[in-house]
Image (cartoon, rainbow, N blue to C red; front, side, top):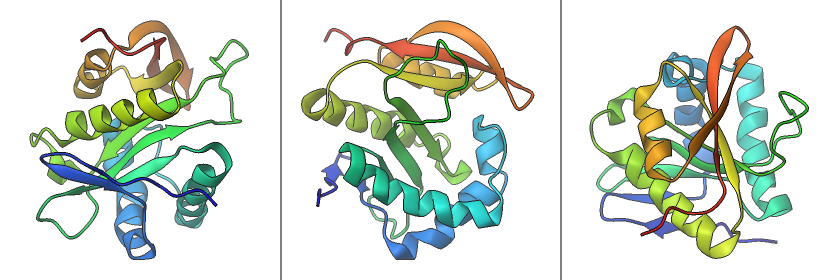
Length: 177
């Protein structure tokens, strides 16, 4: 059984999701947070519990997954960040590498938590897993695109999914210091 690492930065802690995080997780995924952040659509309530459990299983099957993002001084998760290997490939020439993703509750806007969380997760990935990564970001989400560029991602193509346009970005290696 693999242990999900805990990562601490000056602003936040990345930690394993806990059963008591589910209500907040469901609020993020069934409310308007997911579509506003550039995800195709909010998840239906019956799929939220499955996705919550899949994250825990993903860590055990692949050695990576998503962490809960918890700002210091806040007793609840503010979102999630991490990596996954999806079997739901969007198109045949999709990269077979892990996909990075980050999603924070709108309450976190302007706090710098997205960049901090994504950087901490990528620093861990570069030390422990290594290798190329990809991400898909809504073309109308400049904040997330800026985070991706700072992490060393470069645009590779655009794609449509569920009626929304996404920028597919790749990162072959970490950016030079």
